[in-house]
Image (tube, rainbow, N blue to C red; front, side, top):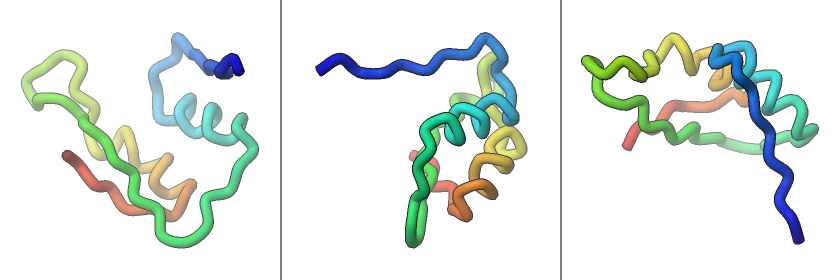
Amino acid sequence: MAATVYFTRDVSPESVVALYRKLAIELPGKVAVKVHSGERSNQNYLTPEFWKPMVDEVHGTIVEC
């Protein structure tokens, strides 16, 4: 079975939420949003503020590993 892949060139909190909504699923219960945001000095570092809209969307808690 082929997987469906969603892609966006817009790397923003809004596009992450839009991609999640495109899945048309609901995550019941407690949701842990596991992220690896990278190193703070790295140009690709994603701040906790970046993930806040997605965490709010799923009523979750960030778990960074």
